[in-house]
Length: 400
Ligand SMILES: *Cc1c(COP(=O)(O)O)cnc(C)c1O
Image (cartoon, rainbow, N blue to C red; front, side, top):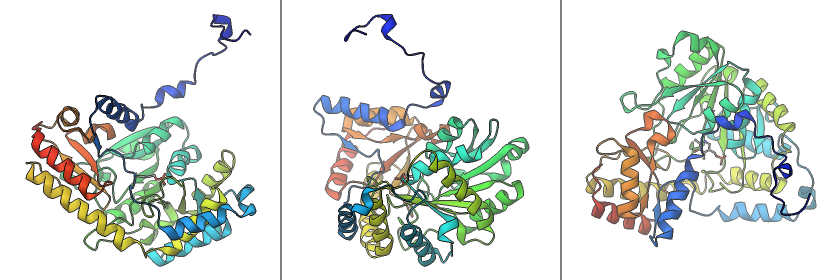
């Protein structure tokens, strides 16, 4: 083949797999494009869109990672499911934090960030025609990975009227019958809602009754305010027979770039994900696992300061948005404000806010149809920048 040849014979492509049609355009890619457009016009854009902590990883963790990076043992393949020391550190943390005793070998597997495990789990659970119950609005990976695995994602609307908890009783009978798994995520992204223990009990009972896996995404278990400490579903009686829980180090320790987390709970499901993964990846880099161990041992030392910072930002932003005439909630956990917009058209509101204030927020409908009428703002910027954003938002006076 000649270089630079553009003839038809030089194109061996027969086209992509049908499953590529099932991929939604990744929400934040669209928003990144809008941001780039505004920046190209010379606007100093303030972006509230992506849930990525702005603060650095605590120094003790970085130092542990640096030391481990120099250890030749970590230059070789890691243990697929996580090193014994990592799994033990995760089990000890679950014990100290939630008073839940787990067998590190059977009930914990290390993940390359929890997104990886959440994305792979349906490939271990779902046959064609099986249903996975997914909160909507919700973290896009629950439904996206379900569809890629050939399953059907059944949306469970989260609305203000129901305190952003899914209506389990209202799920149709045929859907319950075909359902293999139920996703819950509290504290919740994107709504910032928290779940009372009664709801978690109901979810465990529902999973038992319908013989399905309760999948709990606990990415924000450590980001709580006004003294609120989110629970683990595994604390509840009987939960360990039906539930797996995903714990991420990303938000807790400002470690989104490191890629480390773990799954804990029902051993057959944890083991199945481990087996699946051993066919796809080769585990978490050893130096990153070492940093993860240091992080879990550090807990809870850095958390009061971290949560004080988020809480101050929350209070500043909520007060500023109220001053500007909006009605934001005051979340008890997560670094998200899920705000209803005047007029109810979140897309139009977000567009006008970029144009008039140079401020980017995420339209709620991007997380699912029940997110219509809301925008999500992240508290991942310093107070000066937040104040600047609030001033601009107030001045722009976007009313829907
Ligand atoms: C950030 C986030 C995750 C992913 O975290 P990683 O461990 O960094 O992959 C999972 N679920 C929710 C709801 C999140 O917001």
